[in-house]
Length: 438
Image (cartoon, rainbow, N blue to C red; front, side):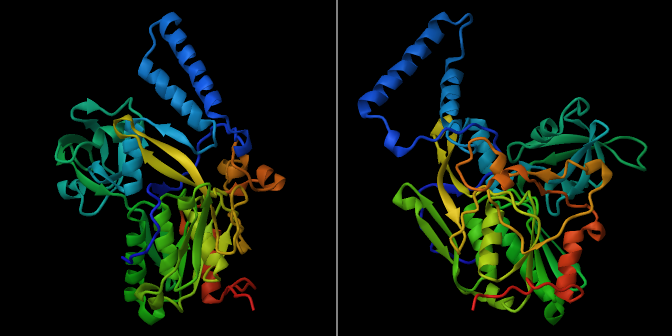
């Protein structure tokens, strides 16, 4: 993996998506004096004491304090928030891309858990769990009545602990009991495929495993197809974002030089510029055409990558307008008390665009054929519609949605098919290949 001289933020930077909170921004000129601040804090203390002494039932004082903290943070913008210890640990697992578990992709079907597929080289795969197995009991307790999240929580746990799955399998006359020892599981955030000698790389999230997965996919596709590799498609549709450093690494994978991203905040350490550096990976695919797919569910880190590759004329963007989340959140540890997510800066594409609320416009707008059952439910307005978003966008963007529908069948995926046809020359457009100014 390439090494970048990224300026330390002193905090883990993350880009996050949806949080329906209210925003009330105060201008710095309205800042209170120290005396006024202490007066307001005294008011808080007075109210807290009255609740403790006079509320009809004895309140949970710890929860009162945490609710006050959460209210303070969520009043700032839609993305700042307090994370209690459990939520903070979930965020750490989610962004690291690893957790203690079994290694199966599951859905809920007929009130029981259906295995979509076991992940290769995980405890579940080694224990013999198969796709289309139905998990009906966990440690002897029926799954029926649990939600999917509850069932997944029961399967996750401390590494080295055991769980017994009771499985109903087609062709087996009796339920099968399988005991599995939990281990570290890595999210599979990257999938690759080939369509008519065009490599397709689907990136689901920007976890700590994202760049490594994309790098492996690019190298595997190059090794597999060699000179027959006609082009690459990076699919960022419905990717809600994640770690900003992974967005920088992935942009750098396709760029040999030039700016990737700038961030600007109130403090000097939040004003940062990230540039691409030449290495063997971008040299390997320097002459390989690239298309990036985006839609209304492409947010945050997805928009960083799409904006960098668009501004640097490395890729043509196909699809529909992205979500428009152009702010950076820092996850700040509060020790045993959990953590806080705080908006600390805005980010800007190489041309100086802030995509906050406005989103990234594709070079070529292509729509899907929406099935009747999804009509009217395929669009999302995006950041512009969130109460308290920190500014940006236009009235049109606040009232006009962008489609998030992607067919499960690639043969019915208009955006993917158009991108492949562009690379193969079956379709032409003035935006492909991208052109540099001058």
